Length: 280
Image (tube, rainbow, N blue to C red; front, side, top):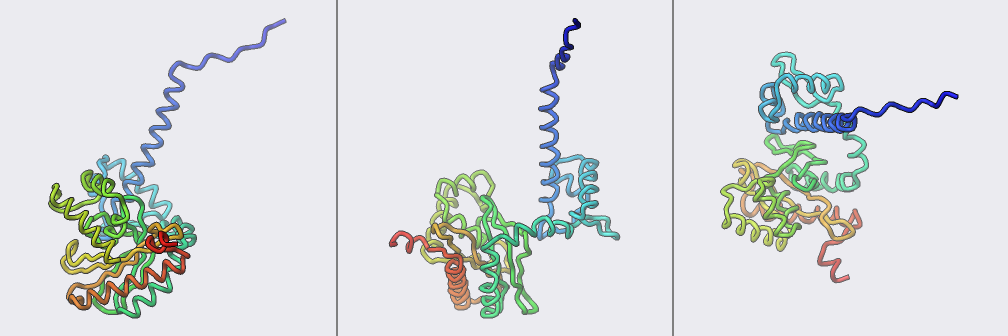
């Protein structure tokens, strides 16, 4: 009787090749994400050479990634300049998430009322752990205005919404984010870090944060926290406005209006501010 055939032994490097294949696949995904993230609200249109320089990839690699994105409508190419911008296909990708984001749905009517009341743009920001991101906006009807595009991300320590989110973090965490450069702070040293931590304490005490031309000389930003049912910050209401329209007296009234809107969103979410939670 002929013995059954035994399978051939796998090549010694077969498992290693599979592992390398997984690593290469992950690397491709990371590179593709880096290309998408190279586009910003300040620089929405970029060429292949600019993107390659920013993400540290060869131009041929960037071109292949962009060609695939273009096929899927994730990026669009300007026919005149041949530069790229983010495409409408990204909305289809993000749409289901935005539709299910309860904070966005609950905040919309409050933001609309806030914009009508103040005459300025209002926005809803969420925190991804290292950046403040815009998920909803009601633009001002005034001819001169400041806006926060959907999907815009901010990691400047002096940004009003970033101050709100960092004010809820432990000082050790804030210090680590600043020291690593994940959150940018001009003139970073021991003194500036300590001053910034004191500033965050004042933000918590006041109930809203101010960016009076510190990240952009022409813009003022005011933000206030929205809390969830655990008393944790779930989002921030942001009011960006042209600096020439915001006097010290106007700043106070805008801050109070922003904080009132944030409290209203908190209530609509069934949230509770930390002091209320502790006294319950």
